[in-house]
Figure 1 (cartoon, rainbow, N blue to C red):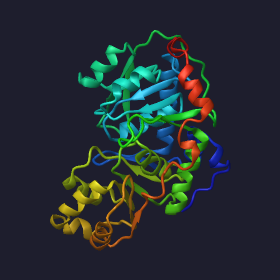
Figure 2 (figure 1 turned 90 degrees about the horizontal axis):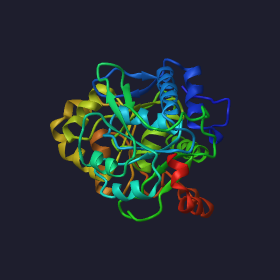
Figure 3 (figure 1 turned 180 degrees about the vertical axis):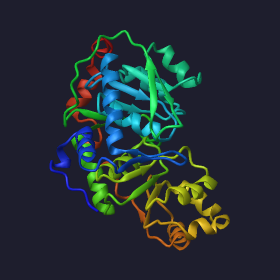
Length: 344
């Protein structure tokens, strides 16, 4: 089954696109996770709307920068979408060694952290005096459901949703270039990039993606999360990959495809001989690889094991062209941005 949007998806904010899915196919599953009940598009929009209300009440609105430092899983996915539907989302890996620099230089207004974990990230954020919002998963409910608590001294923000040309995300540079410029992505550009990936993969609403790459970088964000959501399909958001649990997810979640990095494929292949039954009953129609070249021998081995074609997308970046970095005017605005304007 295909999804036809009445509005041009190339020029729409993520929230508007998801809202249209919620109106057209409210019971279609949007977010799933192993061992959890699924979240429909209707419930996803309800969660995003409530998160908008909460953030606006805390003084966070359009173009404010909110960092997310959360572990992989459905809560991360929904929180990403909620922040990007309200402000500008800056996802950071919990173990990113450059977090100190990002918090110093990127004018972050608030940080969302897991509740009750007093780890290095908490220490770093508190050292900078940035307000912390704590996210508490509710595992007995649907995937992606959480409580968000915290306090800021900001006055409530205008209840204005981001526009197409507002930044949805600012991504840290890749590990290969940790001191490169951050990657700023507008809603219009990001929806176009996700649509391009979905078109290349011929995705439709019947698909479900097991995304093994967390959305801290473009692979996990664009191909792993947004390409499916842009066409009204399902995204399965597991916790950190363990090679044995992958085969359990394959059996219980029944994805039609999965996307991973070469090192993850290697771990899967190494553990495949112990999971013949789960592999035989898998429903994969293809496998995607990115974030590095997949050796041809590994590609052939995956195709033999899973009886599905492998698409090596490392030469086809998820974020394409000059828009993947900050333009000259945006770099100037970034460098001269007033800290008081951002944090007042």
